Each structure stands twice: as structure tokens, then as C-alpha cells.
Image 1 (spheres, rainbow, N blue to C red):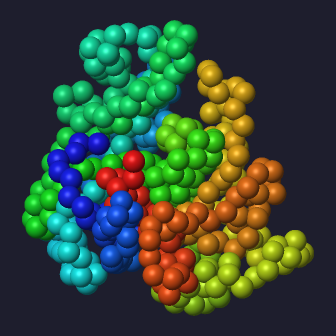
Image 2 (image 1 turned 120 degrees about the vertical axis):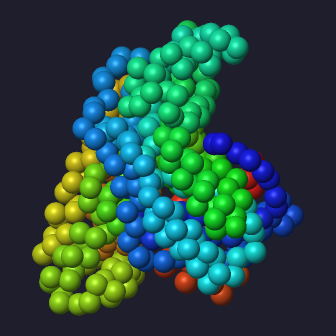
Length: 379
């Protein structure tokens, strides 16, 4: 999406609500090799960079909007934001001792309009104008104010229609990121939705239907991946911050300790304890129950779409800093009768064996950054 250049080493930079994550990969013998990484835990107002209004997206029959918070994004971004973000990026890159000067960067989920549009089969040279005319009916802002990127999904030779995956983001946000990275001294290679990065790092070339659940600090995002492509997205405003609040209230611990507690509990409590009366997951039901309902809703909506009726979801992959919630993967696996596990974004990256335990611990929060860095390294 929106590319500019292509060297042999890349930075993946994920600017999320829970902090900035940076991964540098070098390409050696056609394999991605971990060079360095770094992250911060300082909360960011990434979902509020552009002031939202109350304008709703109309319900159109030509396609199914699948990734947007149904609010128009408008307004401007202050110079204060520009200075803050650029200095933070400079700081984390200095701390991690990065060497690459080219970066692939994530776009906040709340800023990306994402729709799966069904169109008649037309000549390639006519597709742009037809798609633009149809997507204009769905966009929350005038099409001239949006940067568009689309992908035509594979279809059969006898199909009379085709599905086109469209991503759109406000041009003023693209301009903001361009200015941030220019001020940071880095080359902005491309901007990419988090969904594409997560699919690359956690699903790869697996063509089965799966769901990736990204549990961030402020919200949890649900992506259905089909044929390696993120085709639906839904989001709920619950995540790691709420889990941390529950732990703080019950255990009386400092906020900084909650992340380690979640990891330790998920690592050292055995699966047998999951079925014990009054298991630990019960106290987190204010977080788990909405996730449970959203999984059911997302799969139901996907399977009712034309052409998906006979498909069968096979797995659910958890990621994000809050995915180590004790017993969550086992609970979801039992509830939906399918595999559920915390994804390993390092699986496609060569790294030192001695780093394995540490990389496993931080992996879920680095999934987007890893997928971004892999963008130009995996065919």
C-alpha cells in the first residue's frame, strides 16, 4: 500500500495505543533475519489523532464495510503531535540501535475504512472508474480526500462477479505520517493496515479460514483471514487496560507489574486447573464475555455472505499484549470447538536460539511490527 522504495533491510514500526514497537529485519540468503527490536509502553492517542464526528456510513448492498468505526474522520493534527511522535521514534530507534533507514508503518485500525465490494466482471481498464464510483457511496469523506488501495480477490473462470478488497485512509493522516518520518530522518516506504501485517506474521500462506484476535491496550480487533487475505474486521473497546485494572483492584499491585503477572499466570498454571471450580478466568468475564460474543457474531456474519456458506473456520489465533490472559485460549477452543492458541510472529524470522524465551514473552505485542518488516521480504 502506497510504496516508495525497496532496500534489503527494513524497519517495521507499529504505532499503537499501547506504545511504539520497532523491529529491524535484514534479508540474508532470501531469509528474514532478526537484527534488533525495541518497544515502549507509554500510551498513545493514536485512535484520536483526527477528531471524529457523528456521520454514519450508509448501508449499501454493493459491498460489506468491514473495518471502520462508523465515524467520519476529520480535522487536523497539531504540530505538537508531529514533534512528539517524531521524537519518540527517534528515541526508540536510538535505544534499539537500528541501522535501517527505510520503514513500513502501521495505520491505526480506527482510521482505516475497509470494505469488501462485489462488482460485476469487467475489463481491467474499466475497473478503476467503476470501483471509484461505487466506493464513493460508502466512504465517510469525499473520495478526493481519501488515499485508496484495493486488491481483486481470486475468482473462478465462470464467476459473473468479483470481490474487491478496498482500504482507504484520510490523506491528511497519510501526510501526517510522511511528515513524522521525514522529521525522524527515516524513509517511509509504505503505510499498511494492521490487518495485513498480522496476516503476514501469523497466518502466512495458510489458505484456510482463520480468525486473528488482536488484544490491544484500548480495543480488541477481530480479523477473519481467508486465502491469506483479511476480509472482515470488527472491533470492540475493551483490551489490556481493562484487564490491568481488574488485576490492580484484586491484587493491589502497581500497574507496571500487571503485564508480567498475566504472562506468569498463563505460563505456570496448568491446563488441568482451567476446569477447577472458580477458575481464575471468572474474574475476567467483563473482558472475556464481549470477546466471546464478537467471535460468534463475526463468524456468523462471514458465513452468511454470498460464496462463504460452505466454508469452515479452522482456527483462532490470539495476539496483542493482552493475549496472555490466563486460560483464554483454552476457553475459546472449548467454546467454539476449534483450535485456539497464541500466535508466534517470530516463526518466519531467523533468530538466535538463546533469544527464544524472551522473544516468546514479547511476541504477541510485536506481531504487527514483525509483519510490517516482513512486507518486502516474503513472496
